[in-house]
Image 1 (tube, helix red, strand yellow):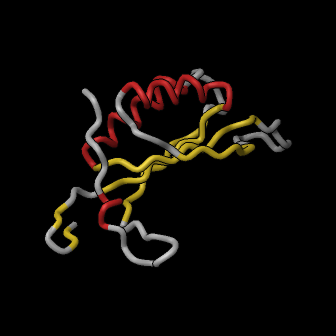
Image 2: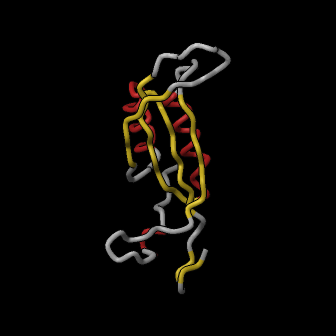
Length: 121
């Protein structure tokens, strides 16, 4: 993607629903690889599975982070390793493309927001 004279790699949004009790471990793992920040929202999820009766809600948090295309694999692996209990209801990860970042006040495309810092090795 190119904006004016500035060329940037494709950005991806990684959204992960993880068990609330696993959030501190996931947060630490993401900080350890250099993710500078994330958005966190509490939610309650209920899977449907193969059962015909309602399943108990498991408290989750929804983490959202924007990284460059080259960092997606590292971020996803970090979330999987630190957020898994190896049981039903651990959550899911969704990765999608980021087409633009707009400033709320002006409504303009903010080219400075389209660069993500590199993650640590």
